[in-house]
Length: 345
Ligand code: AHM
Ligand code: MG
Image (cartoon, rainbow, N blue to C red; front, side, top):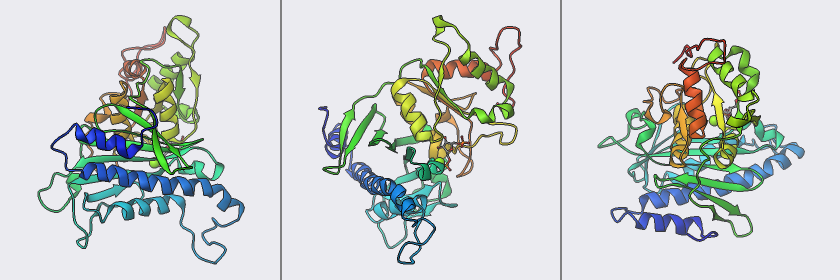
C-alpha cells in the first residue's frame, strides 16, 4: 500500500481480506491508536510538567497529578471498555484482570498491555513505549483468568507505540509487521514502514551489562564472543542499550541485532513480563522474520501460569538468537572453555 496511507484505511483494507471479519477487531485497533495519540501528547508534556514543578503529585491548583503510567493505564481502559469489543483487560499496572463491567456490552477480545514501558526513562526525556497484545476470548460466558493465561501463539494481534523523536505505532495481525508514524500536524498515523523485515544477523547487542557478574557464565561467554574481533562473522558487535525495551527492540527490529535480558542469580526468571512485554514483541519479531527465545524454547510457546509471570528474553535477528541458544544450552563456548548450560534452562 502507498506510503502515507492512514492507519485507519490500512486496517480496514487488511480486514477486507477476511470476509468473515465483523469489524470488531478493526475498531479495537483504532481505539488503541486514539489512546496512543493522547499518551503521546502527555509524554511530550512530561518534561514541561517537571520544569513547572507539577509532578510532585499535586499540580498548580493543588490537585493531585496522576503519574504518566497510571494515567495511560486508565486511559486505555476508558477508551476501550464501553465499545463492546473487549471481554476484559489485564495491564502491567494492575494486580488483577479487569473484566468489562456489566453496565457495558462485552465483546470477544482480550487486551493485555503495558501502558508505559521503560518508566524510569520518563523523567530524563528518553524514548518510552506502550505494548499491547490481543487474544480472542476462550470462556463461553464471562471472562476468567484462563482467558489471559495463554501461549503467545494464540495472539491475534500485537503491537507497540514508541514515543521517540517521532511517535510510531508498529503492529502485526499475523500478516507481516507494519509501522506508522504520527503526523502531529494532522493527528494521524501514516504508513511509513510497510512489511518490516529484520536482518537475519545484526551488528548490535543490547543488554544491561551492569548485571553481567550475576549472569550465568554461558551468557557471559556469549557476550564476550560478540565482543571478539572476527571480521568474517561480523564481530565485534556494537553495544546499544537504552533501558526501554520498546526502544531497544525497535532499533534492533529495523537495524538487526539481539536484545538480552537473562535471568540471573538474584532473579532466575529475569525482569521482563511474559504476557505484557515478551509475548507481544515475540509475535512481532517472528512476523518480521526474527526470533524470540527464553534460551531454551520460543517465547511464543511458553504457557503463562500467572498473570505477571517473568521470563528471560533473547529477541532479535534469527541467526543471533540461534547462536545465543547454542551458548545457553551448553552446545558452544569460547575456545578452551567447556560449554555450560544456563542453570535455569
Ligand atoms: P518497566 O515496565 O517497569 O518500565 O520495566 C521494564 C523495563 C524495560 O523497558 C527495559 O528493557 C528494562 O526494564 C530495563 O531494565 P534495567 O533497568 O534492569 O536494565
Ligand atoms: Mg514494562
